[in-house]
Image 1 (cartoon, rainbow, N blue to C red):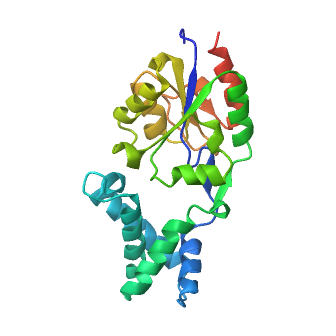
Image 2: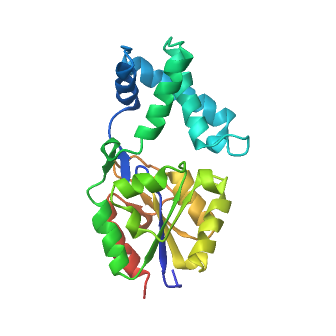
Length: 241
C-alpha cells in the first residue's frame, strides 16, 4: 500500500445499520393508522415498482430536476399506495408525510452488533472517520438517534452533494474534506460497484463488506473482503506502518 492510512470513509446503510422491518410491514402500519387495511406483500411489491420507476425517472432524489429527498420520497409513497387502490389525496399526503418523518426513529433501524466497536477501534488506531452515502438528508438525524454520529468528522449524502456513488466525483468531494491523497484513505461498504469499484477507481483503498458471502466477483482479492467489520481494524493496521 505504501502510503500511511489517515482516514476511513464509510458507507452506512447495510454496512453500519439496516432497516429493521420490511417496507411492506412499515407502510401497512401507517395505513392502519388512517383506517386502511392493506396486504404487506402487495404493498411491498408496489413499493419496489414505485421505487424503481422514480429512481430511473428522477435519479438521486431528483436533485438535478428540482426535487429534493423529501418530495421524492413522498412521491414514492404516494405512488406505492396509489397502486394499492388508495385514491384519497389527503390520506396519501398524510401517510407520505408521516412515513418520511418517522423513518428517522431509532426503532426503524438496527445497528449491526460489530459497528460501534469497530468505529471505536478505528478511532483508537488514530484514524479519522467520515461518511459517503447514497442517502437523503435525514442521514445525520438517523446516525444521531442510533448513537453513531459522534464518530464522524464529516457526512456526505448524495442528496446534499447532488451526485451519487458510483460517480468518482462524490469520492473526490470526500477526499477534499479529508485533505489527504487517495492513497491515505480507505473506504468500506457492502456494494461491489458503488463502494468497492468506485472508491478504487479514484485510488482509495476499497474494502468490500460481504456479511452473507453473496459477492462472487473474481476480481475482489481475499484481502479486500470482510465477512464482518471486526476484521477491519487489523487489516487497516497493516497499512499504517
